[in-house]
Structure formats: C-alpha cells, structure tokens
Image 1 (cartoon, each protein chain N blue to C red):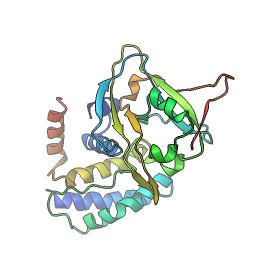
Image 2: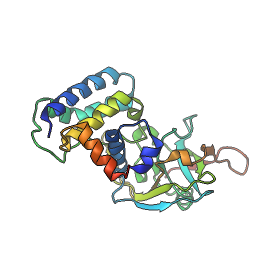
Image 3: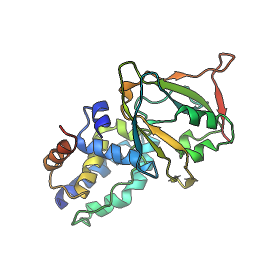
Image 4: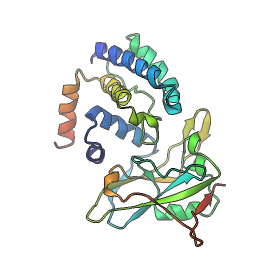
Length: 156
Length: 101
C-alpha cells in the first residue's frame, strides 16, 4: 500500500486500499516482497494487434526467467497468465522496463490465481511480478529481434 | 457500521456506472459484475460489517475504471463502509497509522 501511496499521491486512502486488495486478489498466495536493484529489468506482453505499449499504470510484469519460459512457445499465455479476454490472443510483442538509477523499489511476486472473465476460465499458475511504484522504472521500450523487428512471442 | 453511508454510496455508484457504461466496455462489464451487491446495498441489506466487497476483477491497473476517478472513489468508499467503518475520517486515521504516516 505504501508503494501505491507513493505512486498515486492524489488517491484517497480508500482507493489505495481497494487497489491493493484488487491487486492481491490476482495472486493465489500472499506475494513475496523483495527489493529490485537499478538495472534490473521486467517484461510485459502486449497483443501484436495493438499499437500501444504497456499502460502507464500497469503493475503486472514478468521477470527474465519467465520471459524465457514463454519464448519457448509452449505456454498458453492468455490462460496461464489469467489475461483479460481483450488482451488474449495468439501472438504478443514484448516490452521491457528497468529500475531507474538511484531507485530501489519494492516488488512483489506471486502465483497467478485462476480467474473467470466473462465466462472464460483461465487456469493461472504462472508467476507474476508486481511493480506498484512504476515511477521508479524507466519508460517501457519494445524488444527487437535479431533483424531489428519487434520480437513476437507465440502462444500455444 | 454506517448503513446510511452504504446505501448512499451504492446508489451513487450505480448512477456513475450508468453514466459511464457506454464509454467503456470495462465499465459495462464491471457494472454487470457489481450490480447484485449494489442492489442489496441500496436495499439496506447490510446492517453489520461484512467480508463482502465489490468483485475486484475490474479494479486493478489493467482496466479503465481506475481512470474514472469519481467512480473508482465511490466504489472504494462503498467497500470501506462494508468493512464496518463509521466514517472516512476514522478509516483514514487507521490507515495512516498503518502506513506510518
């Protein structure tokens, strides 16, 4: 909640609590907290059909080991990550954000809880890394492949 | 427990959902999800603190609701009163202590 408080100083405390509670509910366990170091990077998948990058406030990211896992093409991304139907697709672009110099934000890791979105069941089970204090991170940049084209990851 | 505040916040929340639901598919979907609890709250069903809250799926950073601040604040206040607080001031005092402010 303190991280959200710092990220959204104009929010009321009831909003902060609601946001924190809603975020926690996306995990099936209480998240483990740790401190991210400057230069440490986290990744976000965005459907290839969307021109936009990650939204300004999104807290849901993955670490490098998870990115490697999904790059195998053997993960049903929408289901395993409990993505909303609107962002569930067959292929994704990848964006990276990095802890800014002189920053040491708290980050939280948990397993993604099963969820139903408009009647569609998502099994969850993958890990998620929550970055509530986004102001401590760089603006997301798109990851390119060896041909300097946007890297594309396929869902199983 | 502030039953009157629960009824008022729920009534206002429904009006805000109706105001914005055509502007955002997220809000429309959230309204459907939240409506059963809103109806019960407006009807005065909650007379004591409860563990029930508005379904939280659409209140994360991934959806539009967070950008409609009057709606988000009203929903958050409704949850606060369902938790059993008599006033926002009392809740804020508790939270500030919790956050070490």
